[in-house]
Every structure is written in C-alpha cells, then in structure tokens.
Length: 98
Image (cartoon, rainbow, N blue to C red; front, side, top):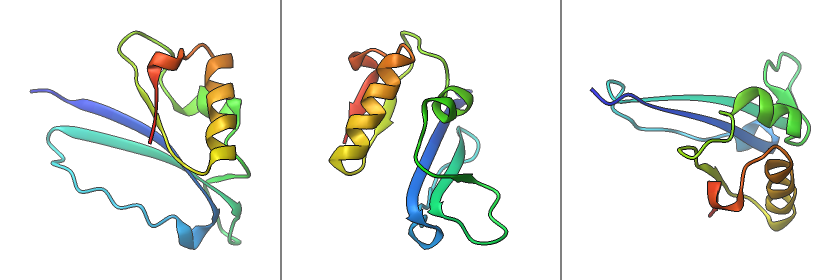
C-alpha cells in the first residue's frame, strides 16, 4: 500500500486564521503540520513569528530529487520562503508556488 507522507508549515497573523482542514483517506495519506502565528493565544503550543530557515530545516524533509516543496502566501512571504529554501539546498525545481 502506498503511504504518502506530507509535512507542512502553516503560518498566519493570528490563531483564528489557521482554519485549514484536510479531508484524506487516512489509510493512504499522512500529514503533519507545524502551526505558526504572529499573535499566539496564552496557551499556544505551535511556533511563533515568521517561518525561518530553522523551522524549515527542523520540520520539512531534506532536499532530494523526490521532494517537492509547495508554498503559497502573499508575495513578500513567498520571496522570503524561496530565499530560505534555496539557502537550505532546495533548487527552484523542488519548489512550487501557488
């Protein structure tokens, strides 16, 4: 059975914007996320701030020919993410912006 693994980093300015829902067949797809916000509530257990190179390195698979990094967001975030990813060894071909 194919067990595709997906990992992600979700970032927003506050917790209420992290309304991401995934509908998957749990027998075939596994997803894990690091949730990051700029304005965390008191008992927040996710990341705080902007997505950093360290967060990418700790929470995403290492660069490899079979790795694809999907990124979306406002232009300044995409520009920063592309720079972080390239510095970590992810080629432009390993990145997809939508």
